[in-house]
Image 1 (cartoon, helix red, strand yellow):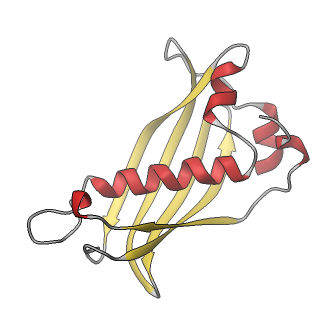
Image 2: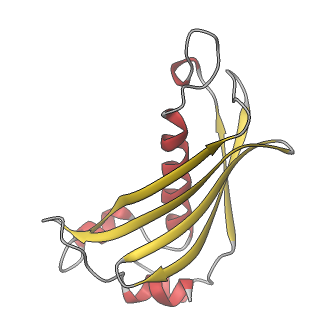
Amino acid sequence: MKGAAKRKAMSEHKISIRIYYEDTDFSGVVYHANYLKFFERGRSEALRALGISHRDLLAADPPLAFTARRIAVEFILPARIDDELEVRTLFAKASGARLAVSQSLWRGEEQLASAEVEIACIDLQGKPKRLPKALMTLLS
């Protein structure tokens, strides 16, 4: 978590993604499970923007990782092959070992999907561990 405590807490983080053939079904529409991958990329990049990397978490003492505990997705409009989309991520609440994340997927001004995600901080045996202090400071 190098420099994490020095960075300013963020509001909404955004990344762009392109839809490729591998993301779609035979009709050129994004397969529903792939939305979870897009949201995962958004969360990982949002943490990275705060100075929190998965590599640093694994190198911590004790080693830590994040796991999805709950995901609720609402599919609004289909994404299609060659679309350029934006994943928006907002860390809504952090407490104990849990982090609540609100995410959305956009094509220009059209919202395609939304997700409410709860991730948990765990050790390598899968036991819950408190969120790192540096991350709590950034998100408070």
